[in-house]
Length: 120
Image (tube, rainbow, N blue to C red):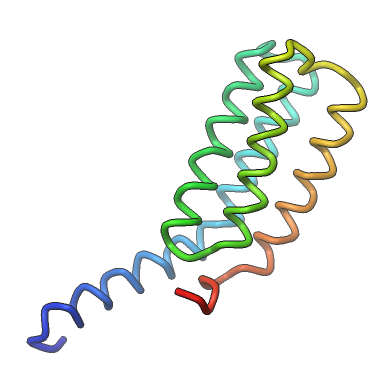
């Protein structure tokens, strides 16, 4: 460790980013599990709210830590969930299919994103 305070902050932030990257697939797995439970009718609209809340957290955390593609995908999924909940159409088949597709894309992006984007 160096005496430069900014270097210490960068090192700590890098460690947080690495940890986030290692936990990313697990976090997405929780979203997928909550989505599967919601699709099966367990929990009604509250289950969809849980999926939206988990997705919202992932979008924000990923963005702050430099995982921009994950953040964009999670935010797009969150927007779909918000629209479904606001319209009271969380059980519409066409919407569920679009959310399924977005969920699959998020899983793929998360699997490829073990480290933050180079822009950070």
